[in-house]
Image 1: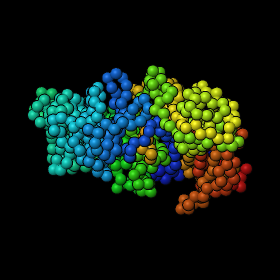
Image 2 (image 1 turned 135 degrees about the horizontal axis):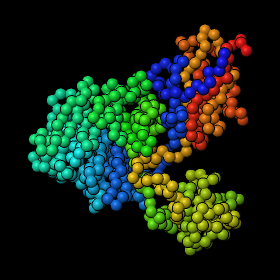
Image 3 (image 1 turned 30 degrees about the vertical axis):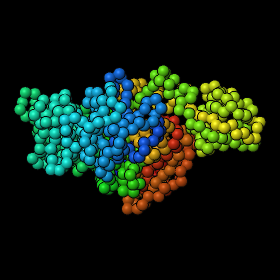
Image 4 (image 1 turned 60 degrees about the vertical axis):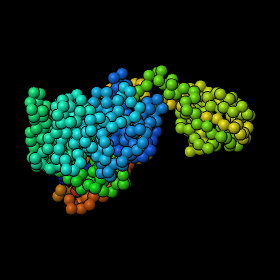
Length: 585
């Protein structure tokens, strides 16, 4: 039997049988590439934690080119301090809002210099990016609404309270505080059929999503209608309101019939049918659709759909479906969190770095430390700074030998536990381990620790292109901290389609993984009949010849590889099996 050559890691299509196919049931923690798949990078938090779970967010571009990031919890609105990465409470009058409904999040949009935030339990809120220090009620008495978007030059609200659940209402033209339904083209429209309005996608024209109907609203200057509203699809709609996302010139959402995409001026087209739709429908927790959230990643022409599975932890999504709309291919990411969204990274100027990371910046005092006998420069303290931070002794009392009051000493990450850390007696940026401390213990009254100069900068990436203007895929994790998926590669699992030579048996000696990932491990799943459950061989590490030995006699088999977390790699295309018909040479 001639070797079949390359068996690719094919298109991720868990909905269908993969026997003798060109697709796969398992592509985990990898993203589609033209030559197979590439790494998906792990999450790295870059901010302090919100007071409670994130329930919405937005980045806004200010008129000076800088970035403002907002986030909402059930009862509060916050703005990120770009200097120290802490969250500032910017809720109306510093107070709290009526708590969000369990199945709802904040919806936020930017309209010129204003950020508008809405939820169905509170009056719409507005923040002036040029002057506000807190949100305030949006003027003009707009209705409470679950969703806000921008259509042409109008602020459009939907998800209104009963009895106006079929209504879409818009502000005046370029006048977001005009809501009298008379002045400056402000008005509303009730949909006669199609069910409740579940959301509106904005842009030059609007797309209205109801339970069973999709309509297009187009501004008609000079017409008494203001907007022409036309049906573009019947027996289709929006099933998960927060799955609705605009990416480039496209709209993506999850409808009652599966994942859909729509191009400008065209009609909905399925993108998940016989690929991921049926698998998703069986896996998603339909009682927690507020965690079924769509987010664009415009840098890579991908869209992500986070969701809570039926086996997931309460209050968190635990899986993310990735769809590359250029390659028309899917994958799945095993990642938990509270919220996903596109965010620009608020980079710092050198002057801003000097302010943010100077000595000291908001020092945290620790009353005392104790030197561990024989441990050199290891100290036990009441709290521990993070790796990359530093300490500054401020006491005038007796210091351990080799240390000077007012001199910064930098924390080393190795050997540190929650209460122990290493410092340098030599000082300087990234200071190395210095002379051993000779004292066995000393109480110096107090010292403080801080983040020193460029060594501890985590949010500004100086070699990244256009971090402020181009958003990246971001999230809030289970600790309520915001960050980006730009750390080391996650552990990836990829498999081929199932192949065989029935009714004859095959003998597999092993396979060669076609990837530039070092340290990859591999195994075979195999079974005698299509009705049997597959067994899995032991995973073996690729050897110096790029080969993974396996010895299996069977009728059907798949190749699996696992690329360890933290591995530097760029592609995984498939495997080349070493196989023959059993009993033949």
